[in-house]
Length: 403
Image (cartoon, rainbow, N blue to C red; front, top):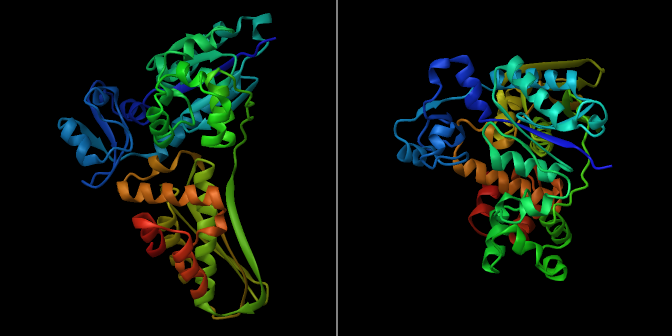
């Protein structure tokens, strides 16, 4: 029996929440993002998109394209609350669902045909979400996650579409290769140079060529071009926190060493945060003295997943916490109040350079391991020289070393 996989995607989610809070904003070109000239666009309304504005675009360029747009700083607390509201509606109705991001969900409706009709049930679920949340949402259904996601994106906003079993290849064939998840700018550019611009053409590429060019990802590319996707629905569970701590072999009072360890901890947990597409708004620092007394301090901040923001808070909390001048046996960092959301949408006040830097850092960590890329203050001189000589090249490398 074919699966029935539903993809649900809230239309222009941040903008929709802002319009829900202030109905007078409806119908206007809106941009959510950093207010400064060097800021970036986190989200924009469909009215602004008509002028060529899109997410991750530099704010100065967006305002050149659409000078009448209203810029809003963004309220992650409100976005998180509304995301949670939609999640509750889906959880109350769906047998199995996955929360892929703050505004995106997958639901397994397989077997519903025996009782109600899978697509009819999906339509009713969409109506229920709109009614109970007051937010617009698009929906598409097919036999797998890949085709459903592409269909939702293709027919948004206000999408309500079914790709019948067996029609996957015909649906995907005329689409540009950029429509396929996992095909980014570099992959698309490489394929364009080879004359591959549509999914139908990609489908005709020899498997040996794709594997030689992209490794194991070449197999996945070809499968996706054929509409094949066996990735399962990952049942949603609410993760409460991400944390790490270190117990020392010998108790220490070396503040410089302690702060270096905290920096390494922040790099670790912040990368985990971005890797899981999460943001945090509560940071806790923990220390345990040699007499086993344990103390913690925490603070609430605007939602973020940025190393430099979290690190500054951690260092401030440690300075406030460590006032007894006793030997320390353990330090720890915990990030809590987690919400779904990728790195870009947390950077309302950061620059395009910041985003590019974090993307480069995370790419290297994914490829070579988290421990292969650390701040200069957490490694000894010989390791630093070797890293500078053998690992990094060009401007991005310089930025990463000096960051």
